[in-house]
Amino acid sequence: MKIRSNTRIEIGRLFASLEFGERIAHDCATRQAELSNGSHGRFFERQARQESHHARVFGRVILCIAPRGPRPVPLALRDYRTRLNHAGRRGDMVDLLVGQQLVLEGLGELILHRLDRKFDQRHIGFKRLRKVLLAQERGHQAFGERTVQRLVESGEARPERIRELTGEYLVLAQRVLGEMQSVFDVVDADAAWYGAALRERLEHWLDLPT
Ligand SMILES: [Fe+2]
Ligand SMILES: [Fe+2]
Image (cartoon, rainbow, N blue to C red; front, side):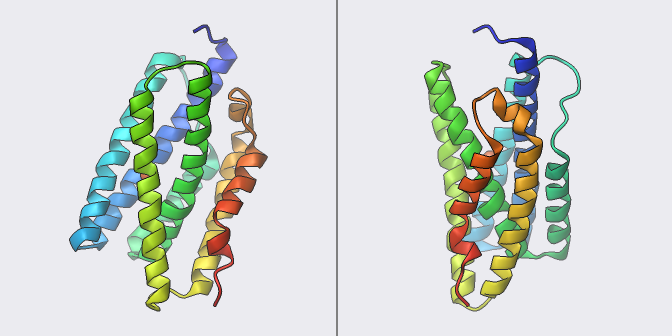
């Protein structure tokens, strides 16, 4: 497939951002594993391994299709990482679950799902790999949703805190999207559409009754 050079630059930025997001997810799941035990600890250890594999996959894509040179990732994504790192240092599992499994994974899945359809339309292969990756991301998200719900039901997490955290991480995610519009243009996607879809996906947590 012939790809124009500015398209290659934007695609390089897209995959560099995805790779960066996977590294954030890896570090976060590693910290979550340290803070957990039993089956939860094992889940997060497995998630950390999977995120690290995803990062390597995107790294290989970059090597294959993107030109050399700087591939800046959104500043807001760096801020997102900083915020999760702070939560990790405090050992704040509720903050980590909302920031990582609910919001960041939700955003990642929306982007990957759209990309997956684009790959299908252009008859680009890696079907099995794409399917496995998407299934794993859904699994991480579903686990996070079940865990947060359980924490709310058991009274270990206050609903107003979940609402607040979801809103704060959503604002950060919207900033990430805003910085990626030129990247999305090349895959016929729209930052505003992603933002609205993410908000809709998080509605349950944003409107959690007290
Ligand atoms: Fe991942
Ligand atoms: Fe994930």
